[in-house]
Each structure stands twice: as structure tokens, then as C-alpha cells.
Image 1 (cartoon, one colour):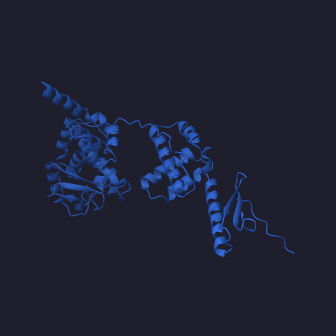
Image 2: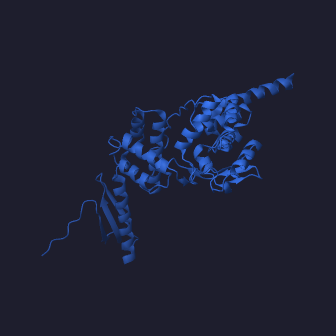
Image 3: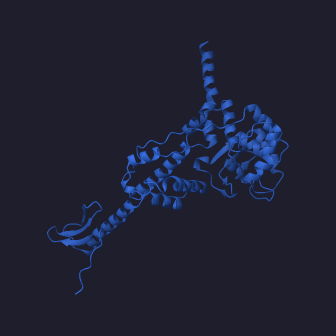
Length: 357
């Protein structure tokens, strides 16, 4: 006679209990404790049995997820999450360099404590931006685990975010901005630089502009796309970067002249008619104008920071600057650029002096 089939450890069982008059599903957890799921009293129907079987199956599935290591969770999140390609590539680098191979990476997600995370983050011998990146990745992975009912509470709750140390961003003075734009007037891309220095748009946002994004009569443009370094048009960095920006007359005039010189759907096409290639643009257009204007060479992206510094110099409010920059909050603008808006604070003192005089 064939023997009774042996149950696999952790599989659990379902049986009818005459003494308790109900279906019962029972399983021994990894910690050795018995977990039971009870059906309705005096209900011996197949539906009642299936009910406790489903609850047992859900527990087994969740328990398996609980035992999965945090490193595997990170890898799956990076591979499947709806994030920008640049962010995905950045996360992949963080995972391979700073998470994989560590004690934390092999630990089951359900066993990781706040203390484990604090010890791990404090032990990273890298710069503040990298630590913040790792923190952001882990924060999102644990949030997904909670969403999928793999965890009741994320161990990241209450864990202080690593301090942000804003790097000093090189910017041009107002006099240098004028000198550069004067030197750029003879260039076919004067409008590109006029936009960069009056709108706070980054190179990727300028490269992603289509004709339909610009209203010359309305005096504004709409930011809603990015051009990657690979020459691919995609969405903006985040939803806050989608914004409408009013243009000064000088920029409108420059755009009008520029758009009248070609019929490409892109505002700034390459010689072949497609999106502008950054490497060639920097080397062939930007660097010679910098040399001609006799101003310090800064990154193309630093023109965005220069535009923001110029707003601070002209007394534009921090709130308006934040919206124009496409920041998620005014706190983000203040933390990064607050020192550029000290002139506005001086204006308050001047007004008070006039009032009390």
C-alpha cells in the first residue's frame, strides 16, 4: 500500500475539526510558531474549505517574499519600475557598487531593521550625493514591499535622510552674461543661449523643444520633453519640470529670427535635421563663443544655474524662481540657491528704513 504523501516543510495543511466544527488551515512558520486560519463555524461546504485554503496560499506566498533578500528586491525594482532611463542606469550603478556583496544585500527583507540600515548608510565611504542616492533607492524598494503586503511597515520610517551638501555651482556675473550674449549674436544658435540664460531651462529641455511648444505671439514656451545625451526625445525628469515659461522680448525676437531660418519640427535641429548632438554643439559652438567673450568656461548645464543667479540679482522672488526652475517645492530652491537671493532680503531692510525714517 502506498504510504501517505509527506508534506513539504512550510506547505501547511487543511482539515475539518469535529471538535471546533470548522475548517482549519495550519502551517508552521520559519520561526517554529504555528499559524492557523479558521473557517466559519458549522460550515462544512467546499466554499468554506476553499476560503481557508486561499488564506493559507496567500500566507505561503507572502512568507516566501519575506524571505527574499533585499538585494534581489532592488534588482527587480530597477528592472521593472517606470523610471527614466538615466535614473535606471544610476540605480544599477548604485546597486552593483554599493549594495551587492554587502551583508545587507543578502539579508531577508523582513529581517532588516532601522538599525541595520543606519549602520549600513553610516558605513558608506562615499560622497553625500551617492549616500542620498542609495537612501532613495532603498526607500523606494521598501515602499514597494509595503504596497505588495510583503511588509507591514517600512524600516525606513523615521530614518533620517542623509544631509544634503550642495556643491558650489560656478555661475557668470551679470556683466559676463552680457559679454557672452554679445559674442553669441553672430552665431546661428544665439536663440539657444538666449533661452538658456533667460528661462533657467537645462540643455536637455532646450534640446527637446518642438516648434509647437513655442508661442511667439503669446511670448512663452512650454517645457514637456527632454533630449537625452544619446539623442532620444523622452519625458521630462519629473512632472514638476513640465511648465510654461514667459519669455522676455529679446528671447522672443531671437526665436523668431531663428525659426524663420529652417523648417524642422525641432526648434534647434542638427545639420541633418534631427535633434542637436550635445558633444558637437559644445565643441563647435559653445566653446568658441566662450573664448571670444573672454568669460570663464562653465558647463552648459551651469547656464541654468547662471540664469537662476541672474534672477536673484534682479530681485525675482524665490517662489517665482522655484516655479520657473520646475522645482518640486520652494524648499528645494531655497536649499540650493537661497544664497543667491540675499539681495531680496536687503531690499526688505531698505524698505523698512524708508518707512521708519
